[in-house]
Image 1 (spheres, helix red, strand yellow):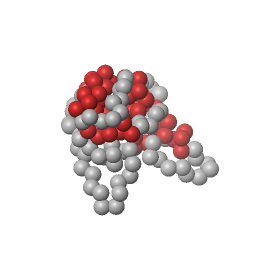
Image 2 (cartoon, helix red, strand yellow):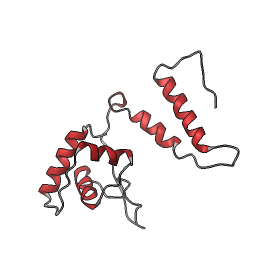
Image 3 (tube, one colour):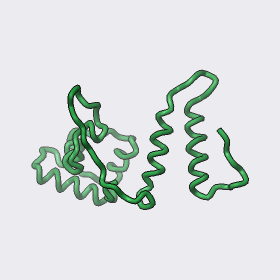
Image 4 (cartoon, rainbow, N blue to C red):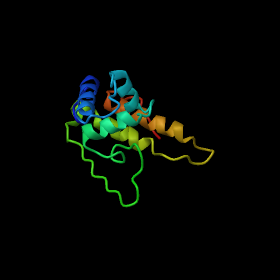
Length: 134
């Protein structure tokens, strides 16, 4: 949403950490940042501090923890054209992944995947003669 590549975000994270004189300056290589974005690896304290400084946000704003009672969060992303960053795809995927488990008759993971597949197929020029109904 901020228009940073993984490489540029890594550079900026290191700069911010150095300027703030943080004890642990993250290596911030692109692979590590990608793993953070994908949820494969949870960022350690040095990364979390650097992310908060870089994006001028709190840990709850960035989803690292829930807000404490009375703690205000006010993180606002810089608007960017959806055609450039694919945020419309991410928004749909995030919404779909919030589908909670239902009964034993319906597997919520299968439902999530069918909806995502159908939506992606529609927006990527899928076969119009093979519609998907859910």
